[in-house]
Length: 227
Image (cartoon, rainbow, N blue to C red; front, side, top):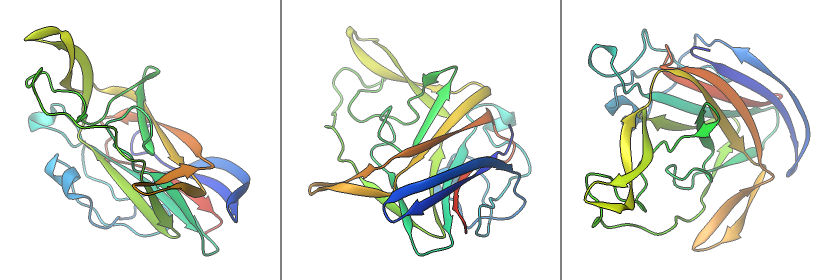
């Protein structure tokens, strides 16, 4: 489903969700504001866009030289409402297989979409510096607003460390073309206290099937609360 953008009608009342309506496919021809630097550096094309769930498009699939992988994709979750309210998304380390507002799957398997600092890369193992578990971090999306994640088009697979086969490392591989599922998640509130102050609660999720590479280079999900 190339260049998929979706609208989910969701009625939020206070901190609780009163009702959720059907998800409707929208093919956008509008423009979005400046895309992230990471996305452009990965080969994406800037576009500008308006409010209300429209997203910019590129003229052709984005990718490496000659159309070879990796193909970067910009994922956008947008919130619009007819009242003054917000939703929240979890910005905890995108390299984790859960705990981030965007999850990518292929054939029912969750992909590690970013390099994890707690596991050595295969060209650095076994003696690379590693980090600890990240703090959960919630990001507010007031209406109208959005949050973006620029996926480079690489996935990071578990492998045996070449110089220490008993150790696990991460191998960077360009994700192959094909059908993928993006799961977008958001919540109506957050909880927690420093130093890990915010973890999203009352979480809802919606799945969007898309083709990789996406012809527009942008996949957007819109939580529409009557805006």
